[in-house]
Length: 208
Image (tube, rainbow, N blue to C red; front, side, top):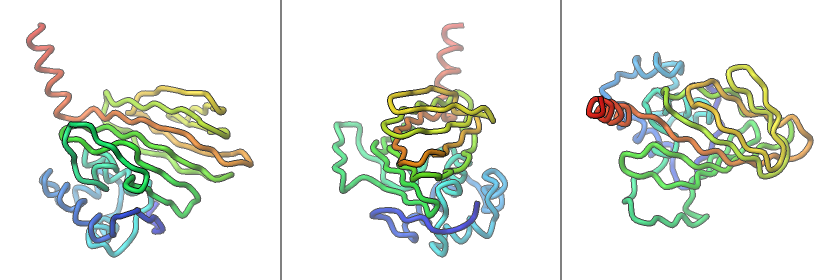
């Protein structure tokens, strides 16, 4: 879980560390508390914040989840809500040493925790199991090519090219390519944040 080997296109480890530290402090969390919430050791959190170690995608995802945000927001600046064109050269790409790539296709918008990704898994690659997001979160997966084994809370689903699936984001979910050829799939993650929950409660209070 805590090995290095991930590269971020267009973002240095020092910049990533500074972003992570800023998000942690903005939420009033000590290093120890973020480590506790994420399941990542305090020493690893400290190393990432100092730019001394490159986290895996799983480690970064667990840190982002513990902070109530997405990997995309840790990698990029928020943009305005007008039309945003992300040319291929400007898209954030994360390479994991296990043999897979995540390309973030959606911009980071103010107050919106939404991520649209294209992922490539090499043959035989297990991307690992990702932590549950807050209740009310949603995820959608569509396979472009190859075969994907999706595990949701321990239950396996075999998805071939053209197949798609929806599942609640507050589940443990893992992605494996057991086939002998490359697998390409798209994933949409819509996080239910504390702010969204507050707005929902306000609507319910008015309607009630």
